Image 1 (cartoon, rainbow, N blue to C red):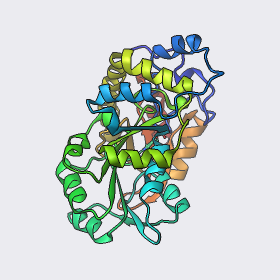
Image 2: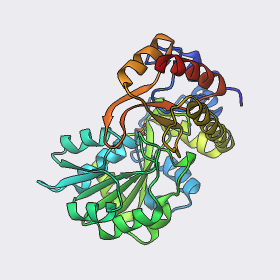
Image 3: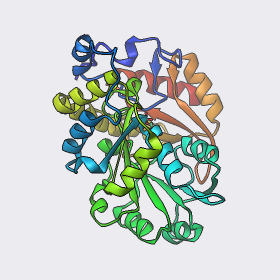
Amino acid sequence: MTPSPGAVRYQETLAGCAVDLSDNTNLWGPPPSVATTIASCLAASRYPSAYSDNLKRSIAGYVGLDESMVVTGCGSDDVLDSTIRAFRKAGNVMAEMDPTFSMMKVFASVSGLEVVSIVPGPGIVADFAATEASIIYLCSPNNPTGSVLSLEIIEAIVARAKGVVIVDEAYIEFGGQSSVELLASYDNLIVTRTMSKAFGLAGFRVGYGLGNARLIASVESARGPYKVSQLSEEVSVRVLDNDLKWVAESVDEAIALRRTFSEQLTSVGYPPLDSAANFVLVPVSDAASVESRMRLRGVAVRRFDGLSGIGDAVRISIGPREMMNVCFDAFREAVS
Ligand SMILES: *Cc1c(COP(=O)(O)O)cnc(C)c1O
C-alpha cells in the first residue's frame, strides 16, 4: 500500500524528524475521502450540530449499536475527560493500571481525584475491587505496553466495580477483543475509541464513547455542545462511510510489519513486549541515550524511564516498511 500524499513522512513533523515514530498515528497518511471533503465543505459560517448527530449515525452503523449509545467528542481525550467529570465523587479515587496512558492522570487530578495505580498481576480483579474507585480506567490494547486484558478479566472488574469502568480501545483495530459485547449486560461500562490512530484523522480531533443510553446521556451533558467542528464531523462521516477498506488495508500492513520489525529487534537481542497495537515497546538499559542517538539519525521514538515492572524502554510506532528499515538501522546503531 503506497502512503497517501498527506502521509507524515512528507511533512515537517512535530518532532522535527524525517521519520517520526513517536505518537502511534497512521503513518500511511489520511484516508482518501479527506481531500475531497475539505474541498466541498463550504458551509462553515454556520455552527455544526450541537451533538454531532450525523457522526453518531455513522459511528452507530459502524459499531452496530443504537445512536443513543454513542457520544462523540473533540478526540477521545474529550470523552475520557467528560466521563470523569460526569462520574467523579468528591474525595474519591480513580484506579488505573501501571503503566498506562499518561493523560488520564492529568484529567483525574484536574477533576480533584486521587489516582491509585495497580501493577497488573494475578490479583488484578480483587485489586481493582478493593479501591472502591468511583472511576476505573482500563486500556486494552494498553498504551505504552501494547498488551491486552482478556474479556474475562475486564468483565470481572466491571461486575465488581462500585463506580464506572472505562475501557479505552484507542488501538482496538490492531488487536485484542473488544468489550463492546459487554455493553448489553452492564450499565456501568463505557468503551472509548478514536479516529486518531487506525483511521488516520488525528489532526481533526474526533473520538467517541459507547455505552448504556443513560450513562451516555450523562457523559454528553458533561461534554456540552459544539465540541466537534463541522469539518471534522463531515470528514469523519465520509471516512466511516467510504474508506473502511483503506483503513483495513493500512491496519493489516501495520500488523504484518509489527511482526517483521519485532523479529528484527529480537534478532539483535532486543525483543519487544508482545503488542496488539500499532507500536512496540522495547526495553533498553538507557532510554534517554537511545532516544537522543536515534534522533541524531532523524528518527523520533517515545522514551519511558523506569516503567513499573519493565524499566527503561522506547515505544516505536509501526509505519510503512521503508520507515521501519530506517528506524531499525538507527536503533541498532543507538544501542551498539
Ligand atoms: C492516542 C490515545 C488516545 C487519544 O486519542 P484522541 O482521540 O486523539 O484524543 C486515547 N487513549 C489512548 C490510550 C491513546 O493512546
